[in-house]
Amino acid sequence: MIDAEPFPEARRPAYKLTIDFGPLGRKRSSAQITQHYRPADLKAMAKRALRIAATADLHYAKHSRGKMHDAFAEISRSADVLLMCGDLTEYGLPDEAEELAADIRSAVRIPTIGVIGNHDYESGQPETVTNILDQTGVMMLNGEAVEIAGVGFAGICGFGGGFGRRMLNAWGEPLIKQFVQESISHAIRLEQALVKLQTERRIVVLHYSPIRATLQGEDPEIYAFLGSSRLEEPINRFRATAVFHGHAHNGIADGKTSTGIPVYNVSAPTLHKTGKPYRIVEV
Image (tube, rainbow, N blue to C red):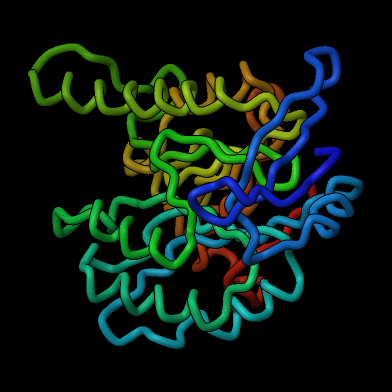
């Protein structure tokens, strides 16, 4: 990103951005981030590393207000962007999402990107949970992509299915085939999101893991329900800069894809082992 200026013609407050794609030339875009940055802030940010704070598995319940308030305030002082990698609620209830939304409104002061997790589906209202968080300004991704300060973000929940030679294949009963098709669908939608990004730095935001390595510490019997290698293939092919996921409460924090792309498990229960329910990574 080489320039940012006001965009008074936009329906919602936004900036006009000029982005340099190297051999592809310069292109214009826009971003609805006026409440977080001035044009001068964006220009300065383009010249330095982006500080990404990430967390997951917050599991907000009906009386969780305040749970992450102090952590959100710390993050807003220390990072440029916040990622929330799924399982944001305990049972996927609107009341739970409202509790989280209250803490976001009161304490988060930086752009925030999120994806939902399996717990957010539990009550059959994932769209409602997503809408509540959208209304706080969180950019909830479900196969979409966004750009912030010259960095692209592609996000989706992801799904299970297993890894490598032990990955579940579409053979046998219809229910098995449906399970595998869901896994394939999430990988395809992640690929479609990555296709849209022309930025040099590309970040993938997931709930489920794309690799086995960050699941170490979980029971191997449940690996197939914690992620899938199908998610790793587009990550490697599009040469993502880094991947953030949650879901693996008992996993380890760091891993790499088969091509060496860093993968960070930012599940809050995992990160609590080091003292904070989030981590900050510079890209």
